[in-house]
Length: 206
Image (cartoon, rainbow, N blue to C red; front, top):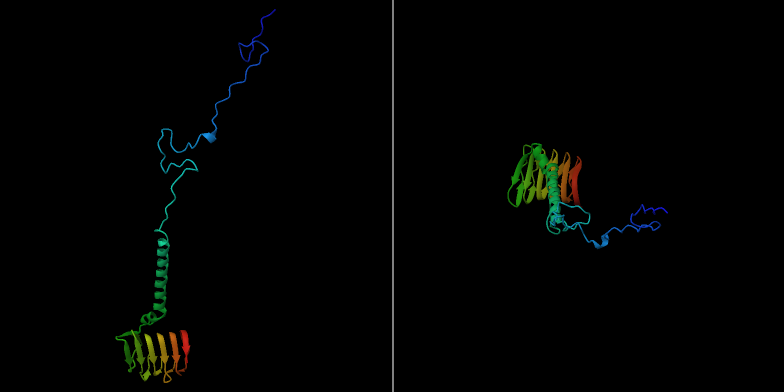
C-alpha cells in the first residue's frame, strides 16, 4: 500500500479533506469611519486654499460693495449722477450753450428783475437769473433769451430764441423769421409770426 498523497492545496491535511476557506479581509465600513478630510496625515489642519473634497466646510462668502443695500444705493447714485451730467451737457449744447458756440455776445443780467428797452447791435444772448422784460421796439440782429420768467415784446427782423420756465409773448410782438421757444409754460397773447415756430413747450396758454 502506497503512502497517501498529501493535499497539494494545503499541505498537512490528509487527502480527501478540503482546505478551509481563506480568512475574510478586515474591511472597514466607510459609514462608520467618519470624515477623513478634516486633517492631513500628521494631524495638521488644512489651509483654506487646500480644498481636496467637494464637501469641505467653509464660512459663507462675504458680501462685496458695502453692508446690506449700501452698495446697491451707491451704484444707483453713481448712475443717476452720470445721467444728470449727461443731461446737463445735452441741455447746455442744444440750449444756451449753442448760442455761445455760435459767437453770440453773452450778457448776464444781475438782480431778480431786469428790463431791456434798447436793442443790441450784434447777435446777443441774454441770461437772467430771475424775471426778464424785453421791450425794445425793433431788433435787427439775432437774439436769444434765457431766464426763469420772460416777457417779450417788439419787432424782430432776424431769428429769435426764448428759453425759460414761463415765457410770455405779447400781442405787440412780430417775428419776421423763425422763433424758437423752450418753456414749461408758454403764453401767446397774439403775436405775429412769419417764420417757423420751433422748440419744446410743456404747457401752452392762450
